[in-house]
Amino acid sequence: MGSRTGWLPVAFLLVAASVLSPPAAAAAASGEAEHAVQQHSERISGPRLVFLVGSAGDVLEDNPVGRLKVFIYDLPRKYNKKMVTKDPRCLNHMFAAEIFMHRFLLSSAVRTLNPKEADWFYTPVYTTCDLTPAGLPLPFKSPRVMRSAIQYISNKWPFWNRTDGADHFFVVPHDFAACFHYQEEKAIGRGILPLLRRATLVQTFGQENHVCLKEGSIIIPPYAPPQKMQAHLISPDTPRSIFVYFRGLFYDTGNDPEGGYYARGARASLWENFKSNPLFDISTDHPATYYEDMQRAVFCLCPLGWAPWSPRLVEAVVFGCIPVIIADDIVLPFADAIPWEEIGVFVEEKDVPKLDTILTSMPIDDILRKQRLLANPSMKQAMLFPQPAQPRDAFHQILNGLARKLPHPKGIYLQPGEERLNWTAGPVGDLKPW
Image (cartoon, rainbow, N blue to C red; front, side, top):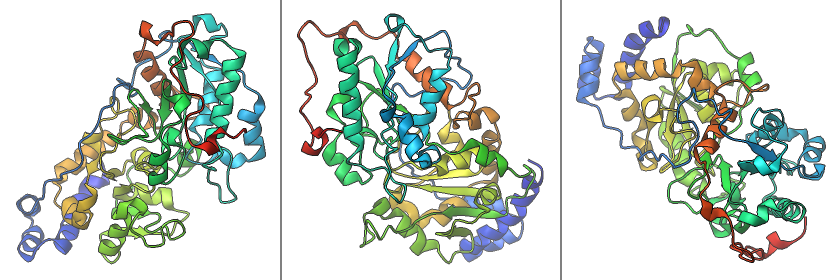
């Protein structure tokens, strides 16, 4: 751990002294920090972790090659490549996993050109690549694009119709996945696109007991640009002189003028409680040194926004900053491969006002243990979509998840004339042609 080991016993005393009661501060200053912290510790009552059946990555070292075969539908370019040509911003936003998964599979050893030997069928449709001028996916366009693509494959090939999509998978990295809206209330009202209810969804959104997460989905990390992060790496011996770090919105006045709905009020609580706390380096500013600052921080806050997930989770793991996850009932990516309980800190949204006490009460040994686990290169690799792909990366973890769902049960095949999907179900606007 180099200089971190030397930093924590000194600086941790200072930060503890600034928030603990006077007796605890005196004890810390006198060199009895660990005793003082434990005496005043407050056990973290974070939400229970959910290990969803079908989550990818049973172990980080699994190799999916030879365990499954994937047939890729050859769609017209308007569903994918033409979108990227029209708006290259799609390549860099947090939803870009759908693009890079397609590119990966085209040259992957699991690809088969013979659909009769395929275990899985993949439809390369980019539902988050039709963007507003501000760079956000158009929520009313996404379900139309998806419906159109499914209609196309069902008319041209026989494979969808024999199972109503039960042996098909789709990458849906939208805020609320196949509910296709960035605001939770509207996403819940929409529900999962009816045509996808038998398919396996590979999605960034994960929240327990939520209508936008169906059983068997594979939860993945959001896209964060690997090359960009690599370019900002600093020496691992750099002292972590920032205790708590966060950059992002606290209020979304454009979509939530009253300030109580965005992030269920958790981000507003962060700002109101800790904007003047010297232990908390939090701001709406996004400096050029953002990635470097994360590598200088002990804790990086990962609060929910409109959805419970964000690229900060990826950035924290890659940069060795202990993620402080503030998102009740979140289902985390690759939960069987990433030991989230061991590397992160989970804080319930209602406990945000006590965050300073929670973090300063952590024993130094626990902090050091989490940092050592975060230093594992395989753990970082599992959170990334590098180009070209590398062993044990997020692409391979997704394939591991698909492989573990095999063989398909015989019951997925429909009887002659049987239909289980209602092609006219869903909001009226979704039925409009695209």
